[in-house]
Length: 367
Image (cartoon, rainbow, N blue to C red; front, side, top):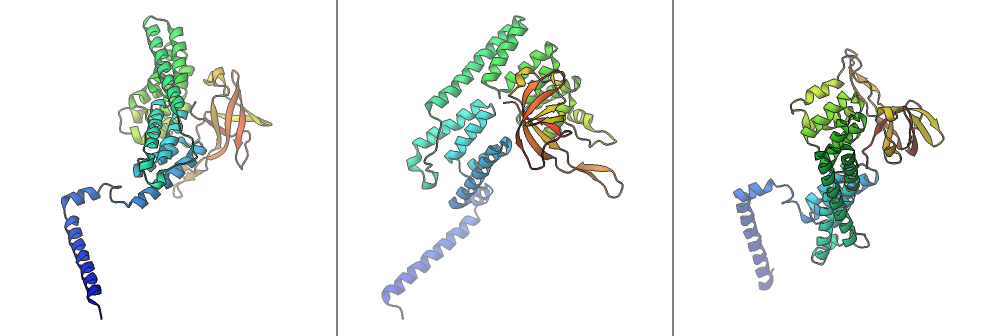
């Protein structure tokens, strides 16, 4: 038997629950709710959103440590999608973009770190990051100074071009790229200057760096691709065509470029920048040199990957080659010496299968 007090409390609880149910029912059938429900993060619980943000951040950080910069970027941006104020995601995106040469993007995220640090006392406990290093005024100023320095060299280069001083323009543009290596305008102008000087292989190097960016415009991609083909450096272009196929396959002229890599017989033969021809202690000799586009300035700057192509997959009905298994990474290399037709590279990291003569190599992006 309920006392008067307990009966009154029970009645109040039931009334409140009934009102909540009615309100929820009305809310579920309003246009505003249906429209808002399509916005993915809005109706995810705060705890779930934070968990997803932290999970994506941890994955992005691991990708960063292993040098998978594009995958790291995707994961860190996903973390910020679920929690825009996650300071450590902004911080590592800034470091990532700085290493990729995208200084404006690095500066943006580091400024976000500074802004959020000022507001940290008003944020929930999960966002209070302790014992970590964040870019201070000096770091931000250095990055801003690099952007300004690059612009000064770029403007000088353009002035020298207008005056017909090609060599001077090349020197100034090279300085601009050293200060701001991820700027697409600087890369395209340097590639054009070298091309007009008939230094085709050197020009292709800068086109390669430009086309390696996931944000490259189709106009720049098409220009670089056509010049790589004209310079008979299709082995440089092949992986770039595969990289951007989904982005550009509907653009005019792309299929014509892609068709250069389609052969009726044995069209799945691996395409590589070169091969390992001999291993000497902790280094390897490669079958590419200055005649294939390498330069003395690449020494101790250009990184490469050694790999073995995956096995050919064939249609069991007709025996036609239809694909390959994934390539197997063998080692990470650093170019140390360049000659006319050969070069040497240091074995920086070797995987379980071991590096040997005959393994293929491909370039990584120059930083």
